[in-house]
Length: 202
Image (cartoon, rainbow, N blue to C red; front, side):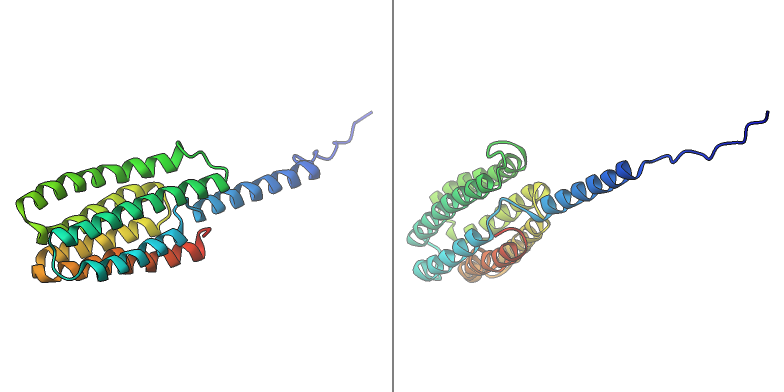
């Protein structure tokens, strides 16, 4: 007696197929969320920018010893605010604070900041205060470009803006250096801080 061929079995049971689709959706949403999130706090960047605007008004338009002291105090305040806000945001998102992207971003930014401290000490000792604005802007932009490899796209864009402003400041008359500091550390921080806060988790 001849046996009739049976219908080919369904390769993927409906339940398994639906579960696989659900898993893929979950993975995609998780990756999209990770790409849109950064431990860099937009609110903190806005605060840093506003404090830099105040520092620029207090320091005045002529780089010198008193001007330098005001900006050093502003840099210290910005560093404390930046570190604390990053740690708070990482903890709120249950991300490792001393590992992963947070650590890589910090290490990438640390080298240019260390170079900035050394150059500031050397240039100030020699009385070359007018060179400091361009130096700071370029080094900070370089650090953001390096750290931006481990963060959202806005960070390297911000770094590029700081670097371009620093180069323009270096080529411009020295009298414009103090104004460039306000535009960079004040205006750019506020502008990018608002963008980060609006689209990347506060």
